[in-house]
Each structure stands twice: as C-alpha cells, then as structure tokens.
Amino acid sequence: MFIETETTPNPSSLKFLPGRTVMTMGTREFASPEAAEASPLAQAIFDTGEAVNVFFGFDFVTVTAAPGADWSALKPEVTAILLDHFVSEAPLFAGGSADGIHVPAETDTMVVEDREEDANIIANINELLETRVRPAVAGDGGDIAYRGYLDGVVYLTLQGACAGCPSSTATLKQGIESLLKHYVPEVTEVRAA
Image (cartoon, rainbow, N blue to C red; front, top):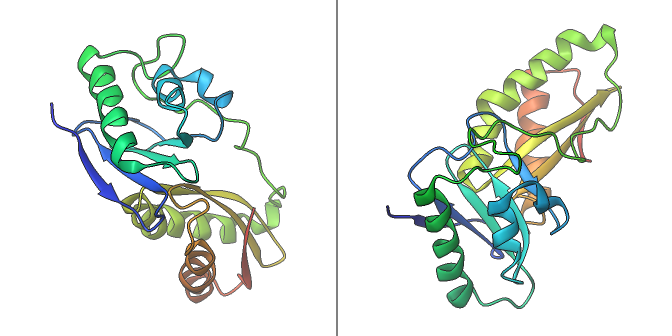
C-alpha cells in the first residue's frame, strides 16, 4: 500500500490519500484529543502530540499540525499510522464501525432553525453546496457544513484544512457567497458559523 500526500491552501494542514475509501458517507472532524476518542485512527494521530485537527473525507485524511510543528518529522509518523491502520483493516470508529458511516459530532448542530416557508430556498442552497462547493473544498482537504438559513443569511462551517486556513474568509465571501447569490437571489450574505 502506498499513501500519497498533497499540500493544501492551509500551510498547517496536509492531505493524506490512502488510495481507498476512508468514509463511505459524510465526513468527520476531530478538533481535539477528547473528540478523537471516537476513532482509534484519529486518536493515534493525536497521540503524536503534534496534531490539532484530524479530518476524514471520502478518500482522504487531513491532518492539521500544531503551531511550530515540523512536517518533515510529523509526515512520516502520520503516514506510518495510516499504513498500519489501513493494512490491518482496523475499524475507523470505536465500537467496530469499519464502514466509515458518519457518526454525528457535537458540531453537527444548526446555528439557526430552518423555517418551513424557506424550504425551496434551502433545497437550492444545499444542492449548490453538494454539487459545486463540497467537491472543491474536498479537493483542498476539507469540507463545508450547512448550519442554517435565515432572512437571506446562509450559515456555514468550514472543516478540515479549510478551517483556520488563511484564505477561508475569501473562500466564504468571494467564492461561496458569490456563487449562492448568483443562483439563489434570496441569499444576501454567507457567514461563518
């Protein structure tokens, strides 16, 4: 087995590609060692002492290093952890789940509750996020989560390499906001949640 790596727009994050499916459905982010207890793989990466975020995508794992961490030392360590995990076919989550089905995290909450009268607008927003936005941010080692829509404002959370990326504000405002405003005229603004 060979694991490729790719840089991301976030200089603190590196995308690892094991050449196989990591998550069959959804994504999962671990923003702390305590959250990583749900996954032996994420826990092992946090145990290096140099990771501050681990993100599982469809066919990649993104690791964000702590400030001052040396990727030249951390990269081979994370690669070895990933190799051991995937070669042994260990479960991705505690409790034996090896299929990668999304396990809801504490951050899977809405910022605002959607209103029934906005159902068509919300459906259009989610379709654009699924077909246009999510594939692009996955290419950069991250994901985007819908957190609500209210009075023209769309609330989104950037995850993985996209969270904390120096260009995340530009991604939200100039990229995603422009796209949504163009196709969904009711959208007036996009805010980070």
